Image (tube, rainbow, N blue to C red; front, side, top):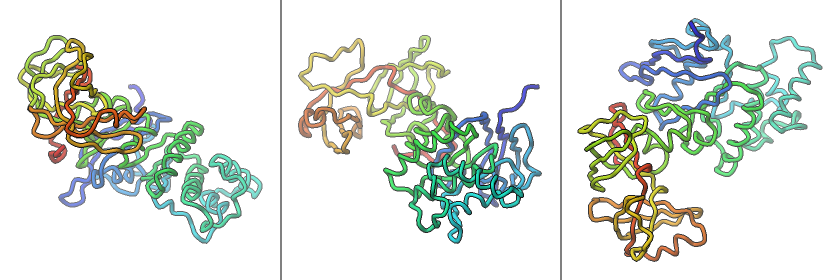
Length: 378
């Protein structure tokens, strides 16, 4: 029998009375992977992380780490360490003492202890900060110290609960890159919880998207964003034009789907088993819709699908603009996203401008609906 994945979560549930915080979740995480648990508040991601750490008991199921069942292992004996959102830096200890805290029972000589702490300080790029007080650190420095304190024990798995949530946007983006680089350098399996879609996409090797205690879909950031199969996942990761549809015909991977907003659309159903007559959801990413002037001669109906509309609103967001286009067949406008290159937004003209929208069949996403989450109003 082949070995399990490095972390194997098998049919795990956690109930608090009648509330199913985690509901029959199964996941496999590979050694050295940076794995994200993504979802909105209350979806069960932090509860699942705490069960990995041993801070919550399982109602049912089993968790294996490096082929060892963990149910009977108390949290302080598990081969994991955890970084909390608050960092939990001890205010009465300096940086050196905070990082060394986890080694206090290892009976190391002063020289070995100092070497280990100095190695950790170099790892987090805080050489020379050992004597600095905890109250003298910035938010980013406190986060680094919390990481060093967790990593100095050389755990098999590092668990991170919203590790960047307390930082401002610019520092958070900087720390995303540093944390990713740090993980690749130490080679330890990281499992982290976040509600921030961009954070999950930029840092993870793979992501599990959760809602109402269930895992809806697991995949790489590219797969989940560009080819999701679940309606909730498609709408949660970035903006999406969603509509209801029905498969009318299929030949190989080529499908024709009838939608309630755009009529008949061509789509590519590669890797999906939708059959004629099946009710589905349909999505098109705003950035995959092209805008052309109504007088344009560049519209090629053989290469793309086209509809005429009117710009009714625009939102300037700095690096990009969101453009809202009303079309005759849709009760609500379509959202189009455009990068602001060479004044592209200004060149579209003002609102009430007539334009063409076009997109390719490969941009039309066919999505499964799910009873694992409340219906969204996207």
